[in-house]
Length: 293
Image 1 (tube, rainbow, N blue to C red):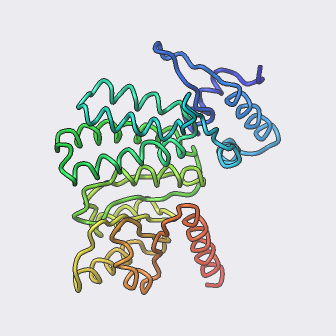
Image 2 (cartoon, rainbow, N blue to C red):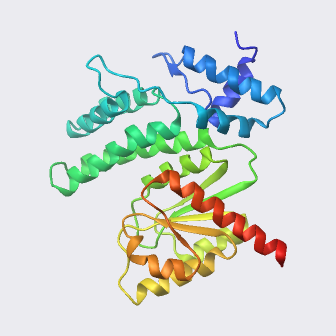
Image 3 (tube, one colour):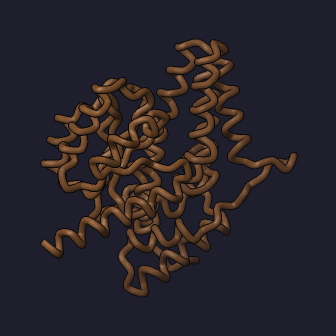
């Protein structure tokens, strides 16, 4: 129908998340009309000489994720998020796995995270803080959702893209599932996302930067250390990032803004769409400085 071989279809799905078909209980792929349209658009870009990774980015960014609805007219992403939270509340591992798997058929990876899995994680965290679910329930949900996000990130990687971003949490930070969502967004912008994980000290960032030469280092912090330790830690991360652009997000980033900006770093705005403009501007400035020198 599309003039694309099954091997190529599977490679595009595995590497770029285009398309993202639903599956039967036996794991057979079910391609919708929207999937067929995405495949044809991807095919046309590639046949026109565009690299597959760039073609996938164009397809994902220009595709309007369908606001699939329930019979009651609600948002399917919101409905999936609610069912995931409900399964966690029931302490139902099988139900949780099933609801997460159903969510994977709703659209592109970024939309799945930002509109379904991410809100579910946030709500489950709130319920735990309010004492309405146990640590065991929160850990179960984190384990299932974390494994799913890691899988999505692997599928979304832009192949042999020349740009890289390192993602890590500040030292003493344990909660990193949000980093996978940030990594998915960077993948959609053409970056290969490398997640280093929780409790990553400046020395580890320095070693990774030395070995991998990333274009960007993205850090998250929820609870910033008090001064003067805050400034010392930010200075250490700034030194570790070397020539890479670096950006800090999370609930604790705003408190560190003066120290971050004093060292040439960026503080992530609440609107994720603004992050790309910040990062691209920082990368352009660095290229210009290199050209001058």
